[in-house]
Image 1 (spheres, rainbow, N blue to C red):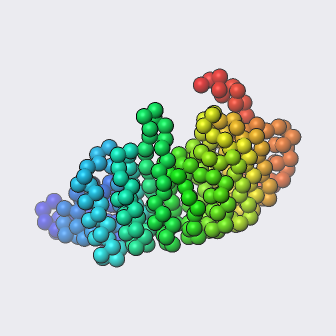
Image 2 (cartoon, rainbow, N blue to C red; image 1 turned 90 degrees about the vertical axis):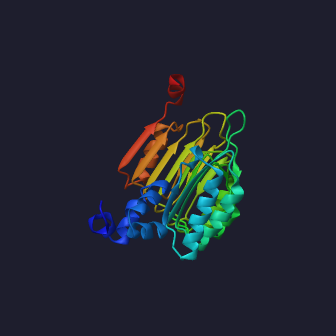
Image 3 (cartoon, helix red, strand yellow; image 1 turned 180 degrees about the vertical axis):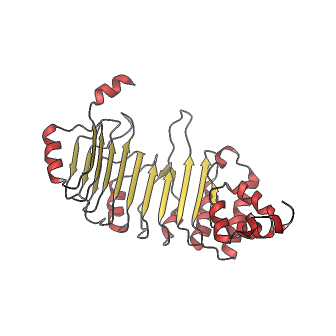
Length: 294
């Protein structure tokens, strides 16, 4: 390209440039900003920042880069739409607290935080979730990996995605009380829960995904769901510990997947009779056969 007159990208409206840059890692988005003054302006006001693979190339200077990038957004009062970050075992969470506070000041809408810390045996070490997250009143989507979850107080949340986390029944109760706008709940490979109970206090909840850890690593035994507007329910009982599954008052349910859940023909017959709107049903029950194949 020779000059701004030949730079087609720079002729695009800034919202379109933001949309294009939102699919790029920050290094590529920053490199794109060198094309022209228009691209540079789009980069400096970009509300989507993706640091989700710095796990592999972290350096001390990168802390400074993130500090400066977020400070610039705060200074220019940029409303952040999405921020993604992946940290390894040698990263200091004190930086994360500082960054989250800046993101909260920028009215962050979607936060994706992965903390991958493991002990010498390779087992997950759960990191305490930065408390600053619970001051994010504008947050709509929260995705966490490798955290120890405390009590939530986020009424603005629409989506909650937890992977390799430690939580308990007290958290689930608090979530059902405070996250009244929740639409999608995903819990995968979690520890600490012996029962999972969700009821009418989440009237907007439409989708639940439950995937347990493998045998001997999870203690979940009871699943009790009575969400009146739930449309999609998926339970993958990899460990075989779930003994009781109750699905009641879910008259809006359209899709149901029960993998490796110990259920009887009578249970299925009674359930299907009560779910008049059900369109898709899948059940893989033979856990012993599955274990033999492993």
